[in-house]
Image (cartoon, rainbow, N blue to C red; front, side, top):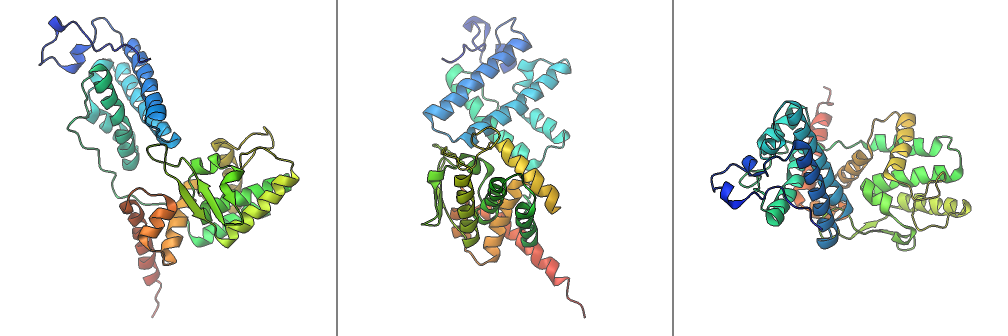
Amino acid sequence: MLPRSPFTPPASKVTASTPAEAQVVQGITDTELLRWLFDAHRSFTQHAEYALAHSPATIQAYRDAFTNFRHFLESEIGAGRRASAALTQIELWVRWNRERALSRISTNTYFRMLRPFFRFLNEQHGVPDPFRGLKAPGPGEVDPKARSADDCRRILVAASGYPWRSPYQRARAVAIMSLFIYGGLRRSEVVRLTIEDVSLEEGTVHLRKTKGRNGGSFRTVYMHDRLRGALADYMHARKDAGIEILDLFVSLRTGKGLTSAGLREVARVVRRVSGVPFSLHSLRHAHVVLLLQGGAKLHVVRELVGHRQLATTARYLRVWDEEKRAQIQRIRL
């Protein structure tokens, strides 16, 4: 059930020219307003998840953006200003993020992920929509941080050569790194994989409920021979370890599916051993660049990695162009 809105004062006290911050029920405190917003956002995410079938990744993005905005409101309260007034100051929120050195792409993402919540508030409670008429701040020139082919080789060697506590953990680490490098998966996609999603015979990995609306899209990853080999080794090690649950990657400590935190821990070990300062998402970037360098067509790469827009994939061409420019400077006469 949706929480009652505090933005419903007696009609006699409100005129068409009344500013939004004055339309709060007289006497409501900043604490009460923040609590109401929290409850309203929970209703919004439940609606997005169950009625609109938005993917788990999108739901989490909504929550992250709201958390950032709530911190902004709390900072305004700490500076002696009313939360109800700050609620309408979207451009001030954008500036607050930039002053905190938040990247342009993150600021743009938070803007786009908070905007649907205020649209929801306007439709459900009549709360004025402060995003109306505003354009999202530009994301700037996005520089995908792809690791080189040599870095990827070092990462795979480190995952295989590290003295893990068991053969299962070694095979798991190699399979995980291979899925990012040879498959271009997102972290959330790896976490949700089950053994039923992997077909060694067909050489495919089926991804369900990936990033996007309407529950996310369905995508098929076609295995590189080395990815197939890594997953085959992992399946044998998994069987030898007596693991029977559906989750593909499992924590031996908990006996449950590996979480995002578990993936980060595996990456932390491999990062230290390899000496390559990578993030898991940078390995997905590397996958895209390696495909393009191998001659794959742009629209094919877009489908393989699950980008919604071709322009997103095209950004990686700039990374390759910079590499070409660097190589030219190696000519010595």
